[in-house]
Amino acid sequence: MGSRKGRELLVYLTPVAAVLLALLIGGVMLALLGANPWAAYKALFVGAFGSTNALADTIVKATPLLFVGLGICISFRGGVLNIGGEGQLVVGAVSATAVALSFPHWPGWLLILASLLIGTIAGAIWGGIAGFLKAYFNVNEILSTIMLN
Image (cartoon, rainbow, N blue to C red; front, side):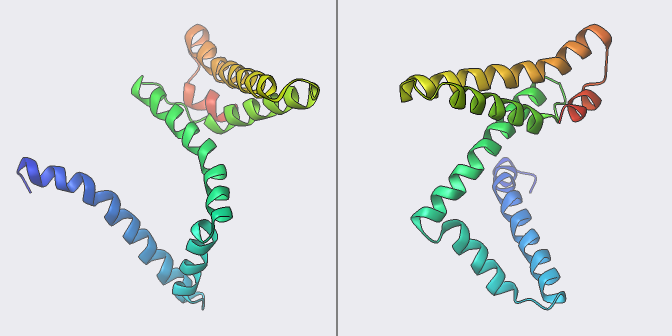
């Protein structure tokens, strides 16, 4: 696969092969434990995508994780190793919740905007602690971001 077209094909086939290999290994492990891999994978699929409610739950749970992954990709592109995305997510979520619970009499649209804004700022400040430590004290960002989880 030295050609350009072969390399492009490999870019698409590698993730598919990785998923299939993971499913195969998981199926072997389930079989070794005495479980039916087909029934387990069917339950997994139906639980995630089997109804409109299941799909909505899957999207609700996956969206914050996708945003954390996107943020970490951006930091990796900048040459910074940020493995503290989970801590930033938690701080942002707690801050947004605090705003929402503190002002229940506000109109819904304003409460949503304020919660999003405060949550974003709080998560950014939490992530900025590691940046401050790196910039002014040369603290390793891997250590500081993992400690901020």
